[in-house]
Amino acid sequence: MSPGTYLRLRREATGLSLRELAYQFFTPPLDLAEVEQLLVNAEADDAPLDAGSLHRVNLFVPLDIEIYASLLAELPTRSVCRRCACSWFDPCQDSFGPCAWADAAATLCTRCARIEATAEKQKRPVA
Ligand SMILES: [Zn+2]
Image (tube, rainbow, N blue to C red; front, side, top):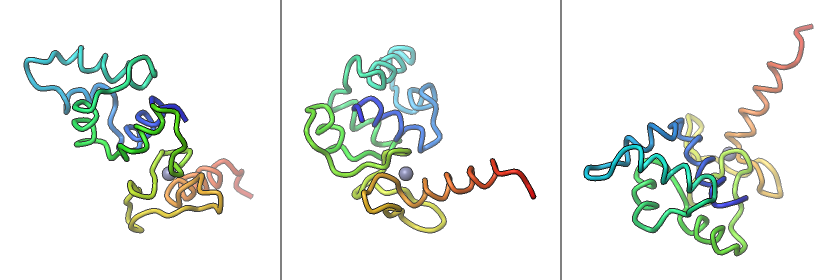
């Protein structure tokens, strides 16, 4: 997973659009369009977020900053959910509580496994 994909999946897991996150994030004298472009570039792996921007994003998007740093440095990382990029120190929270790993290889969290199972059930024709 690339650092930009990690950021995008974590942002999408919160339900925030890029514009909505930029709006949360920007403070004058920063320009809203500039902030949105900064986020677009980071998610496209064109320009990583600096530490200050990363910490500001983390106010609105739960992240494991160590994982982002490892991905940027192309170092091995802790396990990350392939669907929402949550991780051991940054688990999803839903009505069932914090998520856990749904598979032995730690590639999918229990919240995403429930979402996938529901989507699969809805695809099946009604008998
Ligand atoms: Zn997940």
